[in-house]
Image (cartoon, rainbow, N blue to C red; front, side):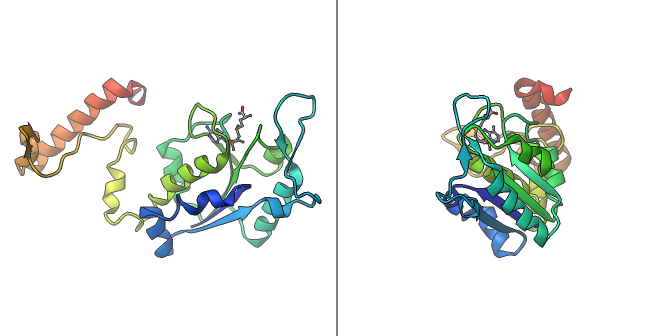
Length: 224
Ligand code: SAM
């Protein structure tokens, strides 16, 4: 998989992709992540990438020209499965979307800033819009890092035990069951007896019951 991220703050990504699964997935060549600094694409003398909003109102809007040039150049080089704009005014990301995107070959993620991007870019180029939740961030960088992480960990080989990702919350519309590790008794805080029984059928039954109970209490909407 190849992910091209377009941003006016490329340095932001030095941290999020240099650790753990994301780092290993790149080392194993399961994913290539390319960060594109938008500013050099500006043909403007000051290399500015934003301007006032038509119709008035506070907040700047990201210009069409640098984004057009950057996306057009990338599209000349390869075909993209999706050109994604991270934006709060769009459908909220869920595990199903992550599963679908994890089998993509090439993705572009466009990070907005200020009030967002000129609508004409959305009309002309964007094939998918993703919000990471009902709140407003300063920029799309965090959102694209969240989206990248949630997709890359699903690529076969990214997690050493591939079945682990399949038993995480949301994969079967349920939240995860409680989990424990050694010691079985810490200061009298005991691990449920059934998990020490060695009986896989009983353990699976207990996990399913606990997952349903937790989902009912915390996210009943998932069960509908
Ligand atoms: N004016 C926009 C609105 O009201 O919908 C908010 C713009 S926000 C301050 C600036 C940028 O941050 C957006 O263009 C988007 O790229 C990113 N962003 C903010 N919140 C986000 C969210 N919940 N999900 C995805 N991206 C978000």
